[in-house]
Length: 482
Image (cartoon, rainbow, N blue to C red; front, side, top):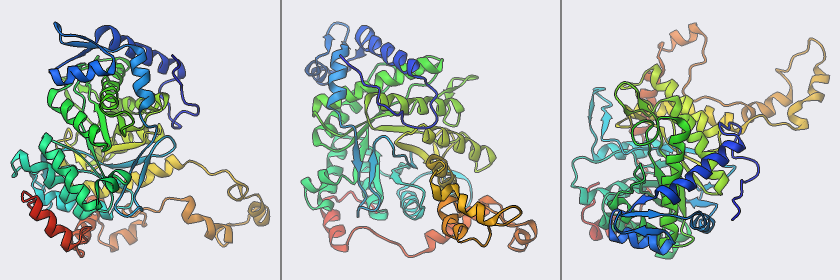
């Protein structure tokens, strides 16, 4: 059995060396084959048996041999394409590409008018989707809020419908009921024109988080198997927390994340070989004072950056987590926590980084202003990912020679030609001198972000569904509330 460590690791930042990757991998295989995975119900047990796992019905544990893991990883696509509505926002989830977007699902929102936290409603998702559609550095909409006023049976269709109505970017989301997931897929097929068209250009994808430690949730496991059998792209991240649902050490927690995510890949590939499955991580650390969940820690950045290396080792597309904050308000902590983890995951080459815009307060709350601020952060992050271009043109010997000692470069054609493609041009940051800044109102970052939110939400509403298809969908799916 040969495991290929893909040459040219995924990014510039690599917290694991080759030996570290090998040791995490080998320890993961030992956990899967010697400790095993809890088998929560007969339906899941049957999928494990089909995969080739050894299922102990007395202990309700499935032990998965290394050769089964290798076989299922090999059958998974090395690339998953997540499409936008018109081709301009397509995402190729594979080594060499990095995309950052929203995440959730948050139960609360900081009210734009009062600044106070309140429960989120379906109208808030409308505002977020419209914002994301206008923010150039936010690559996708992972449905970030939960409409608390709706019964759970109506949540799936309403969340996906709202996202697809108000953005042309790819829409991913968690799902809550098997019937809801099925109805979302049927709805998307109607939008695409046919079931085949949706599979050819999947503008929706779904998430079914594997529950750590070593114990898949029966409901979400069945959901994942359903989605895989439908051939809809599905992310299978795991969320071990250091010292709580995983070992307190970063390496031990990484093993737990790898084991649980590989289990998701095995289940998805057994349900439907070749189905588009995305290995993933929502791994994080805990507050050592109370063992509560954290999402803004540097350790979360380490875990998700290392996950990019593991995904590359297996040749799997990678769903990562970064960019959220534990701050309760849009403040300095909010900015530095979001920036640090986003740049760590992105520089490690994580393919699809969710939670990178808008999310705060232990991933329980979103802020419209934070979406705008994070858009600026992500522009800078991606400039760092791009790196430094080395060509005869960029090295500029001829220009330096022409300018000579004591010369300047301000008026050179080379400067005009290259300045905008060489340097990130901010859309929110202040770069005025103090006198100009004071004359323009002395607005801080939050005030400028609020103005951007207001400008976008006050602009003409853009919808991505025709009146005819909207009417058809509302007739077929009467639970639609938007």
